[in-house]
Length: 161
Image (spheres, helix red, strand yellow):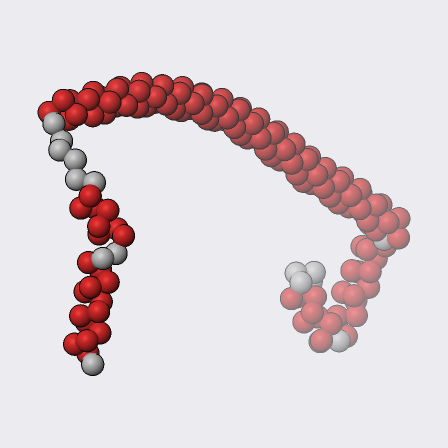
């Protein structure tokens, strides 16, 4: 069965239209035909070379345009970056100035307040504790120290006896 199918397939291929057409269309190729085909190929090649040259020139022009655009963009970015850096320097300078001003004001204010409070305290002490009263107090403690040993010891400790 298998041999019969293979044989039928072989006969079908032999008598198929494409196989018979290939045998019938056999044409003798001459040198003149070859030259004509070569001339046609050279003409097509010349056209293709001209188109390729035009394409290459157009591509180069476009690449030059893109390169110029990139250069413009880079210059613009550098300009903006420099402006940003200058702005940041200004902000830093302003912040530093404000910080130093606040610290200076706080220092000046503290000094003024401390000086004023010292003056007020001394005035209050002088008003309440006059030097005569302090002398009387020390004298009375010395008298007391003659009778009381503890008071004498305290006055000696503070170099008042």
